[in-house]
Amino acid sequence: MSRHATLEGPDEKHWRSSIPRDIYQRVLQYALDMVNASGRNDTIAGKAAYRRLRRYWRAQEAKGRFHPFIPETVADFTDRVASRVKLYHHALRLARRMHEQEHTILLALGEQYLQSGNVRAARRCLIAAEADAIRHRDREDARSARKLLKQAPPNKEFERTRSTQTAVGPRR
Image (cartoon, rainbow, N blue to C red; front, side, top):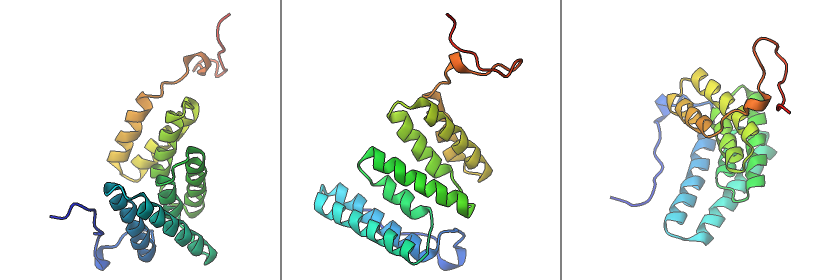
């Protein structure tokens, strides 16, 4: 049995994704190239696959073929946190404009915000991710969002009360 990841997916008759098949297969292949290079500790091959993915993304956008799957995948493999967050926001804008599912992007953004200590932004993203995952019947991602939300408790000092609907500040 091979120790590297391979490209396998649904056959042509059963393709039900909104992602164009050619984009999906190409992006998946670049992602697999990066994962396999990482497994071999081959940083040169990993960086080359990452550059190919970024070039492919730019080429698709130049052709007017926009899909949030591409910048979301680029973000998944981007090292710098600030760049990753910008890419996820770009993917989120595309998803909203195209009326695509958003929960995978929001989940990734929520994780990034949580890791960087921005609990408020993390909660916003994770609550929205859970709602979108439920809407798209993705139980696994809804469960992941709930699990991460437990790590981002609400700030009780600034929570709105039900009776007055006004912000409650810290007591002095």
